[in-house]
Length: 343
Image (cartoon, rainbow, N blue to C red; front, side, top):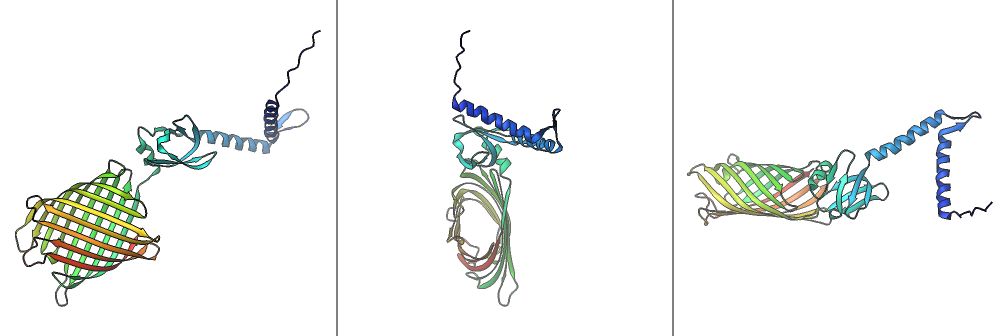
């Protein structure tokens, strides 16, 4: 009888076999016990088996899968996705920040999303609408057409969702001279920004108001513009808009006026030392029918923190109209100190 040659077993293979058998033995020992006549499952073993199967099955069912362009696959959970990056909680590596250009698609427990074809479909599931607002109460001293003391109230609400930014604003001012009745002014404005690019957006707005100090009984405006957010960081913001604005004004003592204007605006803000905020805003309008008819509105402000979400604001405003109503000055200036609550 010829002796059969015995092939040696590689050490790594033997170790893997031993490890697998040991793992199965330990799992089985936790679920079953031997009573002398055979194996049976104890109540404790049944509980362990149920928990084990629940963990395994739930993980396989609910886990998301991120597939990269190079073929790598990561299991985990999608936390956040933007046009530039993806925040992914990996089952093996924890939270990762991945360049969006490296990702091919995301397969979720319910449906699969192709990042290259429709990145907004993922963003809408992880970025719900965000609301913010500002409520301000201020006292001011103004010099120009009138020397007066004012009380100003301003409320702003902003909603940001997916590719839109909606802004609603209400401004009310009460002006009182020493021995005369109060004169009021107000403005209600709604604006909508639609972002067709990461930075570019289409701006539309409508407004209605009145200003007794400038002899304007009613004023309406409707406009559209193209804007760009050059800076949109938390500490620094810069936005510029340019477009067309139709304005209709009903004066108290002279004929009404309505005109189509070209408008240009700039908004800039910067946060220093964590919470100190400097801001600048300017609006410029020129009539397309008479280029000599123009108006400029400039604001400079500084916000100082008081407590959480409460700020003191010091603001300077200038309004220049080169064709004002008869008996009115070209320039109005206003100095305001107020309290703001942000949310």
